[in-house]
Image (tube, rainbow, N blue to C red; front, side):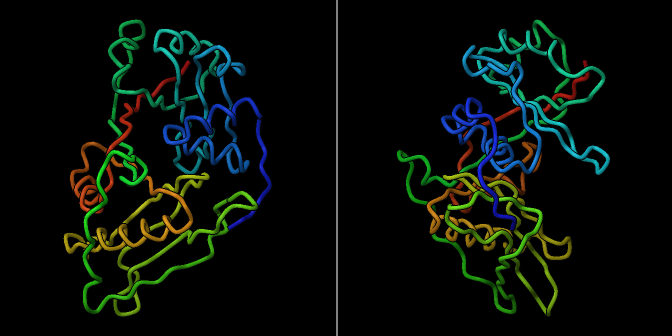
Length: 250
């Protein structure tokens, strides 16, 4: 991991911290400088509406993302501020889509669901007891990930963890975004090892470890990925944000 001092626009950081669960990725990337994040309009937090744009490495197949805040009629008007002839994938709250599309027809290509450790929401019960590691598998944590930026002075985390079998990685959890209260992860199981409960075991262990640093696990799935949604439910993650992904070019 690369430990860095905090950077970023104080106006934007203040807003993002207040809305940390909804904007965990933007907060992490802007505070650490790991990616270019900007607000349109720049005084959007003071005006009560706008977009946070996250620039990606599109040559590597990543998407530029734009996540709105405020009333849909208000942030829809600020699409005119987007860079010309650059594709962004708008992440629009599903509840806002009918109003947004009424004034700007746009196609939604995917529905994305944000899940969080239920202990982040005080009115929910504790997660269920997690299954034990199956016989023949080994759990391994790795403290090195040169591509992940974290802020100096904050509690350490384990950026990667694996399940091993016969010396080979069969499942992994990789941290993608870190804030003061959240850790977002990506999880993958090799095809030949799926449907054996490995993702549930690994995700549950990662969640427990992140709690030790005072943070809650965040996991994003596609609404169409029923297997990933079942894993999230089994370890006690609960949905808290649903966004529609809509490609857009001004």
